[in-house]
Image (cartoon, rainbow, N blue to C red; front, side, top):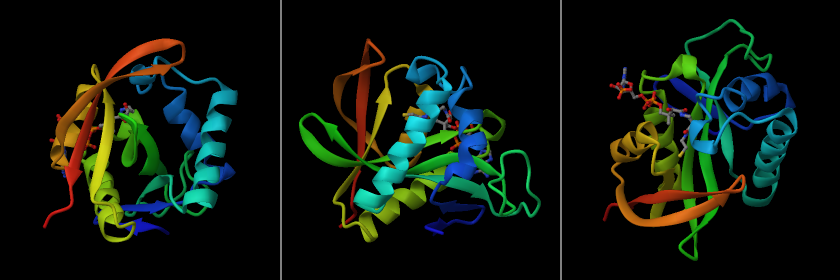
Length: 182
Ligand SMILES: CC(C)(COP(=O)(O)OP(=O)(O)OC[C@H]1O[C@@H](n2cnc3c(N)ncnc32)[C@H](O)[C@@H]1OP(=O)(O)O)[C@@H](O)C(=O)NCCC(=O)NCCS
């Protein structure tokens, strides 16, 4: 287990989380900002990238479980609690700088409960207190209002605009960030 909040538990993902990952990454609505649903190979690449990040950096996107659930559901990795989303810290390059970013993608069935903000706030604090970051970013496509609202709830402000080339498309993005207090 990496982090615990009032309602959530964050832990490293494993191959047992593939069903929960598919439920997010293959949902065309959830993946609007990523230009649509992923196919199976892209889901597996996504998981492999997180496992590689755990090995190389010691952090990455983690599985978010609901603490209150004791029974395993279809998205459970087998240890009881269902995985409702992914949230964590990744290294990114923004405007030529190597930065730490908090990322969050949740299963649509679990939107609008404050879970993304709760998990992301714990990750932001982890980046400041454990990883020693002075600033934490969130890069958000300029059409992704729900994600911008999470960034704003994390105390972030817009620092710059940039264009990301992803899946063959130029996607305008906003770089949100929050600085360590004091
Ligand atoms: C981005 C994403 C995680 C945001 O999810 P979200 O549900 O809007 O955000 P939160 O979990 O923080 O929930 C906030 C909402 O819960 C409500 N809420 C209900 N109970 C709450 C509680 N106990 N505490 C806090 N907020 C609560 C808030 O009022 C807010 O309402 P709103 O949705 O009407 O604004 C989600 O849209 C998503 O997974 N999108 C697809 C992936 C993606 O684009 N990720 C971002 C890439 S940059």
